[in-house]
Image 1 (tube, rainbow, N blue to C red):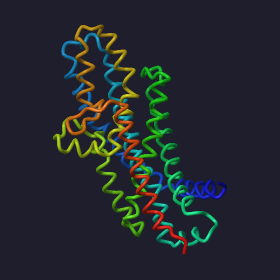
Image 2: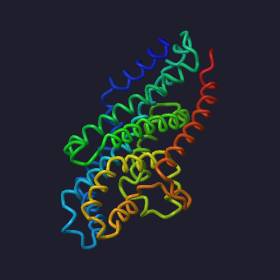
Image 3: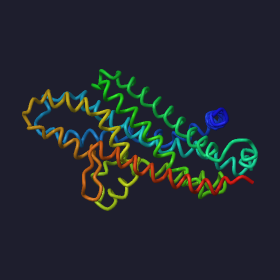
Image 4: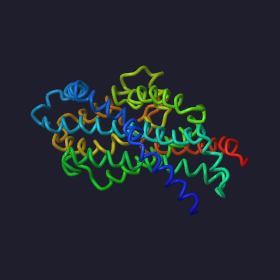
Amino acid sequence: MRGLSGFTKRNILVFFKDIHSVIFSMLTPIILLMLYMFFLKSNFVSAINAELDGLDSIIKEGDVSKLVNCLLLSGIMGSALITVPYNCLMTLIADRERKVDCDVLATPLKRWQIIAGYFLSATVSSFVMTGGTAAVGILALGGPVAINLSANDMLLLYGTIFLGAVSATVFFMIVVLLFKTQASCGAFFGILSAAAGFVIGAYMPLSQFSAGLRNVCNLFPASNITVMLRNALMGGMLTRIDKDINGIDNGNFVKGIKSVFDFNTKLFDKELSLAGSGIYILCFSAIMALIVAFVYSKTYKKR
């Protein structure tokens, strides 16, 4: 296992030593933050205000702002769980392009250790960066107490981040093998960065898309992961607001918010619970893992 841990550590260091790679891996979250500052926040606030329906005097303006900020943070983390693992796996392409993989194959490392080394390094890097982003974001919002995050919410949040890191990494391990050079891999990353925010509903709620497009987006684990992150971050705030309303609206405000901003994944006219989304992601990841095992066993044959 020393060989596996050493190879994994090497891949992680290669990623984090390249500061440009680290910055570009957070390109979509940075773009999302900029868009939020200029116009997304006002759009989201307007959407929430439309659901108030005479509750303006009960629901504090600060609470609406916190809800919108939590929406932003869930979008940032969801997009990071797409771009970071992909960018980390570009190390694999760089190794193949520079024939470093030939040197790796000449070592006592077994094929499964090589495959696992790339997988673990991308998963760890993604979890560390996204988890760190979550911590910074929560502190910027005033800490867990300010946005009503319970211990269970924190466990759900970081458990979801880990699940998202695993599912994205195992999927992108197949995608990166389609490219032979870092240039082509980088070009696809540009497309991925542009599309990521739309796929997970960070720029616009998926509820505003057509049924067909929504189904396509929700097939990707990333959109399910973002829904779970949204529940973890905003669930406590919505529960507190519902208590403040004290049943005056029969729970319609919270129901409206959850409907507009997709608190449950809708796939082919069927609404998945959080547990259902988790099971879907696990099944998807298991299938991708089997494909990875088959494809990489052919790619990294001992020469």
